Image (cartoon, rainbow, N blue to C red; front, side):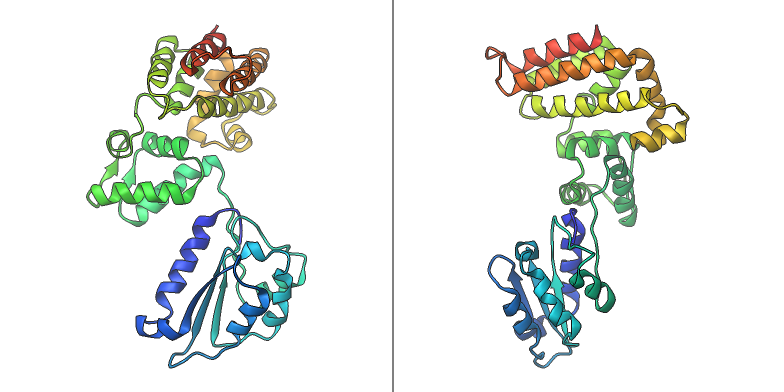
Length: 312
């Protein structure tokens, strides 16, 4: 159960592929969907005995659609069929751990909670996944992926699979590899824009937004404004910290300690009052990007106006 569907899918895949042989699956493996079955039907199937195999496997996908009646499964868990492996994939939600069913599963079976990772945990996750396949990745490359793909582990995993299919084992994946094979520009991306703004590098920041304006499909204004908003909220939090030591800033802002120096620089370039103003500018740009009071301004013009206000 849990908000992060990636591990739920992986566990289901592992059990579905490894418990039974291909010959045994015909009679003993069943995939059900929460929107199509009732708890009573699941229990009825779970109570069957396997045919010419040690186990039967029942996988219930989208089990969260049974949330109104899921507690009725407790009666089965109290007296489970030992030759049935029942896998309930309760994605994007969690059982109430205070109630009977969650307690029983934790006691008599296995209750796995798949939690969403924070943004700052994604680059390390990428490194760990790649290390397990004998690949490495440059810091900038992992940050480009995390900035572009967010915290969706399934989406990130798919892109990593593409890279590993193209690049030989043992490769250290670079920003250039990301640009060539995934289509994220190593020089013109939100990560570089954020750095340029934080450093008050006016020339670089203008080059990047000009590229964004010319390639709106790859760099949608709504996404750019949203990510800049998150960045300046972090700067506001930075200014509010009494203890600005490296470890404390990293912990409070949920960032890698390696990047604390960038926030220190940005904090000097943008005092708290200016950061508060910028958050207001970002809100205005967000409203305009949705067509409110913008007088049909192109997205590129909205972005250029926003950047001017931020930097001056």
